[in-house]
Amino acid sequence: MTPMDTVVRDDVAVDARMDKDMAADAVADEGTSADVLVGGVQAAGELGLSRSEFARAVQLGIVRAAPPTAAGAARFRRRELERVRSAGGCPDALRERVETVAGAQASAAVTGVGPSRFTRLARCGHVTPVGYRINRYRAVVWLYLTAELRDFAAREPGMLRGSAPPTDRELMAAKADLRPRKWRERHVGLLLRRTADPWERAGVLASVLPEEEVRQAVPDPAERIVLAALAPPPPYGHPQIPAAAAVAARLLLAEPPDEIHWYRTSLDFALTGARGQSKSTGERGPT
Image (tube, rainbow, N blue to C red; front, side, top):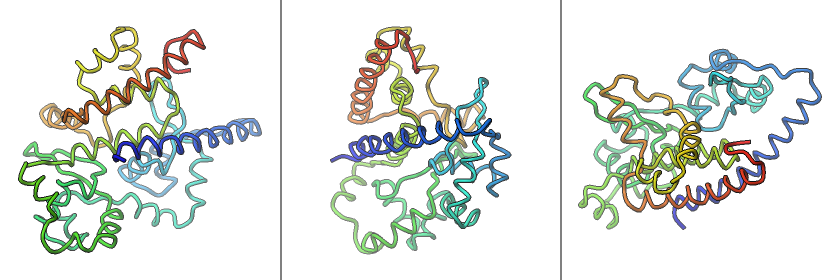
């Protein structure tokens, strides 16, 4: 079973939970005159988080967003904020879950190894980035969840010392770097978990494919317009400066042929469900 197989399998369970949560929300809404919605800045303040901490909590699905405004602004139900707070330990425990470190030096310090060993572990896919930033030299600096690094160090002490295993040596000899691919896998999985709508899911999958692959998979221009409109925005922390944005943009698209094939196959599957939905409703796009 591949990691992406696990993502799809997990999505099924997550979708079922989402459906139950949405149904529960609908029942709750019927029992109240209005469920108060607040913006992201206010929501972060009420949870005692900084803007970046709150953005990470939303990215990881710890805090679930309500449908955005017509202008696309994020909104959050106060009931959702109360749910997060009721978990206990807020905000300290929540901050620990979303805390990140940047780069090999800081990440190595968390795991108790040297920077070169940590870089090898990351390049070979043993730890997965949760985000990125582009530094002033236009180099990618990967971000990792501190809690995940600590868990990895406790779970895999043998990886922190001794010689690299044969598979790692082969990857390093081939100058492989699995960090972009592992980040995309995580990023796409988190986005898919936010929606059960087949058109929105197809939009997520199309967004990670090169343009030519999307044209081949979706020959109907009208459908491509729908998918483009449903494409998720760049993740939090994506640079705005054109030179840095150009570097980061390359991280958003699948590159190895087998990775492209996987997302292309997944898009075909999602489109089958989306087109079936449109056939039943008579409308193209999410319902």
